Image (cartoon, rainbow, N blue to C red; front, side, top):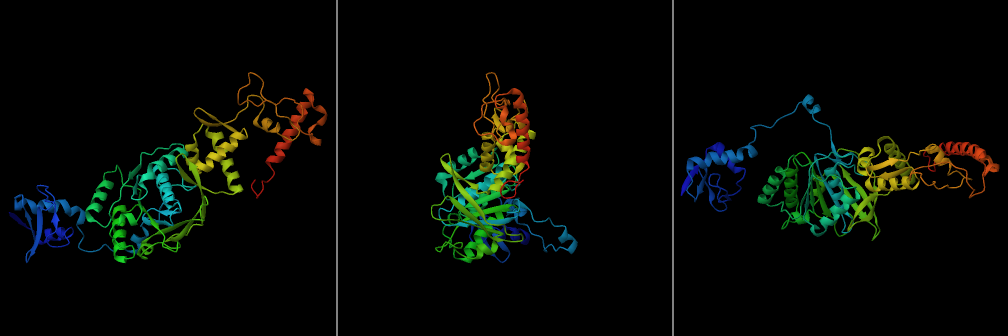
Length: 454
């Protein structure tokens, strides 16, 4: 058996990974593991015995090289002056105004409150770069640790992907197994996994806390503190989401208050019985203004479901206007591109597109959505044909599917007094009628919508 003795400097490095005497570690020379390299203490510091007979002169420097970059600490702490403090970066968000970038966020709720759906939704928006309910995101790699609900993970992700017009998912990574974040070896393995990504992960989601600290006590501040320390160490300066349960009363998060004390953001999800509506509450926001409550709704999508935002009539009307303006300027354009450009939610944008399509304002071509552009007359003429007192005239043979041609037609309603009632079947009268209908369109377009929208 060979023995390598460390200098005091080498012992300081070794102490960072060795908590107790006789702790087993991997030999840095031969790589044998486990139970091959043992530490023992004596007056001169720790010594290491390798059963494989490695050269003592090689063990010490090899171990130092292996662990020094990760654990070396300066002799003093770095103090900041006032000017240096002002030079520090401002608070940044991974989801604009909602989720801090360099911080720990907790999403908690009772069983069936869609807390995991919310966490997955946030993660996939960050991975794909799609806005989260109108809020811009900082796109980047995401790792989703599905320690709970692994069986339905595939269906949930595929349903989300298809309902969002199949965006690029190349930055999404999934770990469908529990990781014990109270175990040093598994923490190290997770750190190595994160390091294998092409770039630092923008967001790490742990779903759930209970499944990620097996054997630990959620009511113990010490165990919860160890869990928090592990998450903070893994996320570095990026964001982390932890999904957690409520207690028996269903009001607060379960277990030690150490979790709330350490969190930068606490988000609670709740649901009234089996209602499809989900209330999302910002229960704590450190260093930024808490955001107002959000009301979401579960929507069936494929073999699973997704969350959508419940919007009022004014918001929907504004969204339709923005969608139409973008399609008119950039069409043909895909739904995915529209979402990114205007910051709209997939389900809301989809409904706006359907509404505009039903009203013959846009149509879907092979390469995306585009505005309807009539070959004869103008779009205002097409609208004029829908004015009170005008009949709906189908296109003649040879007209394209998107043609709008103003032609005189038999009336389907009683004519308005100002729309030229005496010219029902008269070509010349039809011209006057079209002019009057255009005036009606102008009046309609400048009349405020219900709720004050213009």
